[in-house]
Length: 120
Image (cartoon, rainbow, N blue to C red; front, side, top):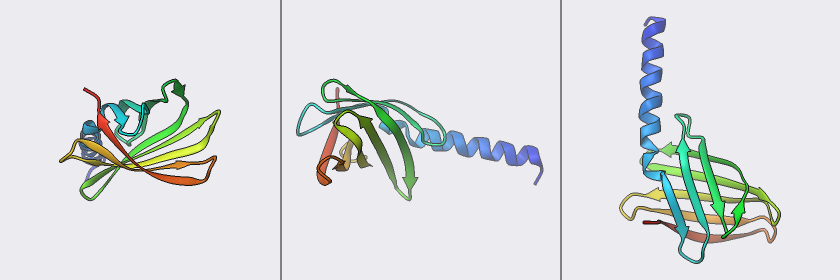
């Protein structure tokens, strides 16, 4: 296979992967409070540009989407005052248009089950 063909195949795969993440775009509110994840963009490698609010802005250190078989996974790491490496690990549930998973609260070293629903 020629170099151009490999490049075009890789480019097509990256576009397809980026399209896979489109259901994540938007604002998501946690059902047990005013916590909001705002997913603004996702590149072909799954790097997410996101904001997090409680209700004030909290710094998002990094956010990443990945695809595993039939599931889209979202990982968000917070790094701010009171949030020294707290993380969300979420899976997109297409049937419910929701993000389901857990939150690790780094200060207390506890895990909490969480559910985010899309804000209309």
